[in-house]
Image (cartoon, rainbow, N blue to C red; front, side):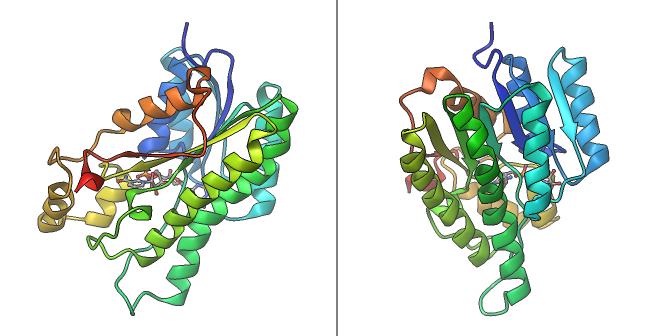
Length: 254
Ligand SMILES: NC(=O)c1ccc[n+]([C@@H]2O[C@H](COP(=O)([O-])OP(=O)(O)OC[C@H]3O[C@@H](n4cnc5c(N)ncnc54)[C@H](O)[C@@H]3O)[C@@H](O)[C@H]2O)c1
C-alpha cells in the first residue's frame, strides 16, 4: 500500500519537468491525481504515462493559472473529479530572468504573477475544500533563490517571488493549523528540466557555475525532489508544517 493511498491531490504544472514526475510518483503511491497545465498536449502525455503505469490521473487543460477565474473553475472541477481535495501541490510557475536595472517592469510583473499569484490563487480556492475534508496539505514549490542570492542567471524577480512563496507558506501554516491544514515549502536547487535547460541554453560556463555552487557538483534529478514531496503530503509527515526544505545538493550549506 502506498503512502498516499486514497488521497485526492491537485498538482499544477503537470505537462513536464518536476510536475510530470510528481504526478507519476504521487499516483504510484496511491493518490488520485488531478493535474493541470496550460499545455494541453504535454499534459495529456503525462495522463497517459500515469495511466499506463497503473495510476489514476485526470488532466484538466488548458488552464492559465495566472487568471484567477480560470483557477477557480479548475479547483471546482478538480474537487469534483474524485469527491474532494486532500493535497494541493503548487508546482507550476513561469518566470523571467535578467539583470538590474534592465529587468523590465513587464518582466517583473510577469514573474510575480507567474510565481506568486499562481500558488496564492490555487490555495485560496482550494482552502474551503481542504477544510471540508477536515484538513489537508498545501505543498508550495519555492526555490533556493528565496533563501540565498544567485547570479546565474540574474534573478531579482525570481528571488523576490520565491522568497514570497516561503513567507506565504509560513502564514498559510499558521492560519491553516486550526483547520487541520499543513503548509510546507520545498526549495529546489538546480534541477535539469525543460525550463532550466531552456534558461541555461548552450552556455556551458553558466551550467558549470550553477552546479559548482552545490556540494555534490551536479544537477538534481526530478525524482530526488518529488520523493520528499510525496512524504510531506502523506500522513507520515503529520507533525511537519510551516517549514521550508531545501533540496539542493548542499548549495545553501556554504
Ligand atoms: N528546475 C529547477 O532547477 C528549479 C529550481 C528552483 C525552483 N524550481 C521550481 O520548480 C517548479 C517546477 O519547475 P520546472 O523546472 O519543472 O519548470 P517547467 O517549466 O518544466 O514546468 C512548469 C510547468 O508549469 C506550466 N505553467 C507555466 N505557467 C503556467 C500557467 N500560467 N498556467 C498553467 N500552467 C503553467 C508549464 O507549462 C510547465 O508544464 C517551479 O515552481 C519552479 O520555479 C525549479
